[in-house]
Image (cartoon, rainbow, N blue to C red; front, side, top):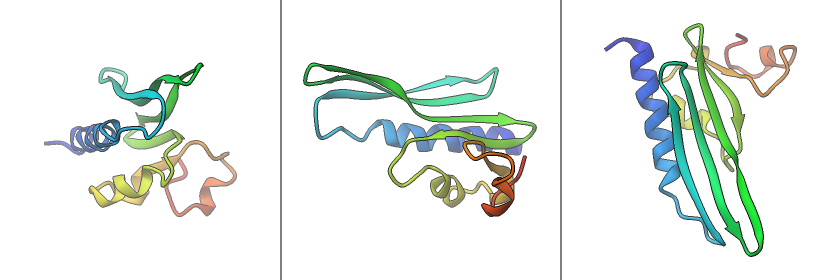
Amino acid sequence: MDKLAEYSQIIESVLQNHAKIPHSYGEIHNSVVIDAERKNFLLMIEGWEKHRRVHGCLVHVQIIDNKIWIQRDGLEDGITGELEEAGIPKDKIVLGFYPAHVRPHTGYAVA
């Protein structure tokens, strides 16, 4: 299996594990949305907390130019460590939610 296919499986697995975690309040559900052709992976949240609608993207990961770009990470402990533990090296992960001038100081790939 090539590395990008392996990375895609890792990303999907990590997101699916998070999608299974129930919320302790409200009628809120997680779902994983994958656009394999464009290499986009999303963990979405939707539902109701009392009378308030909850809907949005918790995590957005993209594969761009053979790197794993974390575009949004709304998880309490973050997804990056889990991706590393599952086998994706730091030099393949870009923290896209930081400005370009900050990325060299993160210990992860710049772009």
